[in-house]
Length: 333
Ligand SMILES: Cc1cc2nc3c(=O)[nH]c(=O)nc-3n(C[C@H](O)[C@H](O)[C@H](O)COP(=O)(O)OP(=O)(O)OC[C@H]3O[C@@H](n4cnc5c(N)ncnc54)[C@H](O)[C@@H]3O)c2cc1C
Picture (spheres, rainbow, N blue to C red):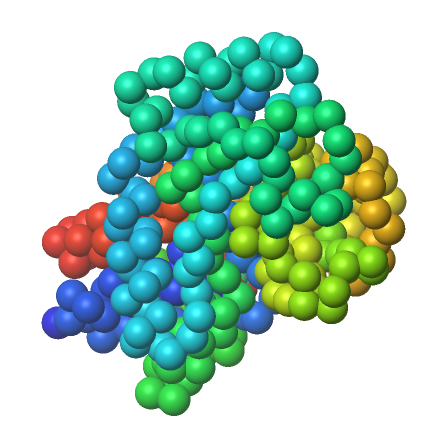
């Protein structure tokens, strides 16, 4: 059976190493434990219908059931809370938006996904008046930090986790110890010399964690709230607000402009005071056509890459990690 090194314990590397172990491979997982990665900053939301025109996500019917199944299975195996199915309340402000929404609601392929309701549910006490409310079902959120932390602890306990930064140069020497190496280093793989032809379009994202100071300390509405930005409770009394999109920037940290954008949009939605608890930023591993990369290197066929989950790691990661694990087990020399 193959001995495999997976580099990166973000959502991609965690799910891939889990799948490879299920297929009987000997897997070590290495991670540099970088402080601000995409999986640590993200809210882990699965949204079936995205964009201004409310279009259903690519391969959603395949990805969503598998994502729920895998997150629930991991919850059982790791003994941590990971997955919550939660509707998204889509605030509709203009007659055009209301009209687009109603038209989608009438289409048979959107039956069971889109609906309308009279109020903003658990958000009603804080949302400004004047919005109509659409409801998106088949949505939810996975806690990436809970998943990656519990997975790291499990592999640590088994002696299969390396807290190491593996540079491009280190891969060559590591190949003396492993049959296959798979890179899951998120945006850090954008200049990976084993995959020189991949086309990346990295998207920096910023997010806030806030507390609504006039709500009870454990305020946590059961729905997520979406307009230009998304609001979701991530813990009692803590609301995640995000995110921004900035392409091809070299600056990786939180910025004044990012915070201003988020706060301006937040204030258009809610009528109550809040306190900012955290301001986070990371680079999403986004590709030029928004399709993920499941690749074997032409430079060295023992090196693979599972990456490019972009804005949809929560949705696509579970099924694609299985397809990637099959690819490695079948093709890895
Ligand atoms: C603001 C924001 C909001 C988002 N919201 C959502 C959302 O709601 N839903 C959703 O599905 N997606 C969301 N995303 C996108 C999501 O974060 C990504 O799809 C996903 O996390 C990518 O995971 P990854 O494992 O590929 O990369 P990463 O999370 O970047 O993980 C890479 C890992 O590799 C490690 N690493 C890097 N270099 C090395 C090295 N040289 N050696 C060893 N280890 C290394 C890092 O420490 C890290 O743990 C959001 C992203 C941002 C920034």
